[in-house]
Image (cartoon, rainbow, N blue to C red; front, side, top):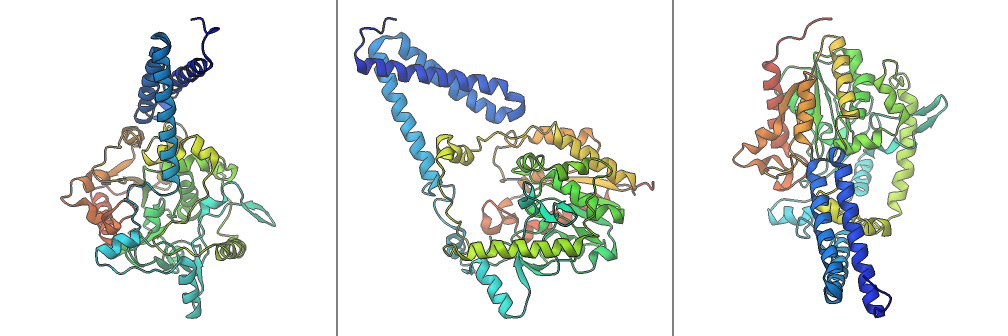
Length: 456
């Protein structure tokens, strides 16, 4: 094709279509290269988009100047629309809740909604003489551990012995008295021992329900088991292994319940993998000795939380139920980050590597003292076809292959006539008190069917 005598506009059209072909072929190549790592759900979408883009661009190059011009105009228009949509999502104009906040939905349902910000809740509690602090999530220390006199330390719990102010998804804030190591347990639970240790992320932690309605409390309510909850919001598999090793292993519990939330646990694991401190928990001698350093760690966590609190006070006030406006980053817009997140098109980590290693290590560690590991697979959104996106089949195959007892709570919820009763305000998020109670009863029923753990 001779382009030397083409009109400048025609040359621009040719360049645009050629770039479209290169981009399309690039998407096809990346999808095929990363198929196993990304999951078929995500990779197939990139493959289809790349194939369509390649075919349309190739047709524009082959079928003459008019076809090239039409293809170029179409590509530019489509590109501008896609980037405009990503920008709209980033600005909050387009979202799955139709622009409504949780506060709006609660009011429509006739429920009371606490309009205070988390800072205002803390201030009110402090005026009552209570030592109130926000939850400090251990995931905040992956890249920057606490610097103590003995060296860097990665905390695994929140601030101990305070009233922890957590989250509000149903109308009222979660406020609970943190135990002596910063977890959501009654005071003295660590000294009392444990028959069952609970690990996981915010669903194990007890997110967004009132004190006593969380999973750990529900397990205590419906059984005589001594339950030690070591879950914390933002924890992935490696953090769960670390908490189990530091705080659970000394009790030699009969049961360890591992709560897995498929929407983010694998991505959380990717962030945890960069921490040399956390990776040491895959080894037998990877302990940090946090129990012995509890007073020093608590003091450092208070200082960290105080500094972070002041930074929050300097920002514009955000009411409960509203999300803070994040700055729009050019890099995220150019990579279509917001659209890919909205439609679940971000790659998911392959579970056959580090995840499998973590689960194998946890099983061996629990069985070394005669205990039994139980894996709970939570639902993401009832009746939403994202099993492939969350690599459900691969996760369950790994768990079953390792001989770990499995409770598939997703199947339980999806079999319900009204599964949304399990969620705060009947929308996607954390469980309601009914959801946590149903999960607790399911776990206890599963444990009742298991043979007694063998003694080492």
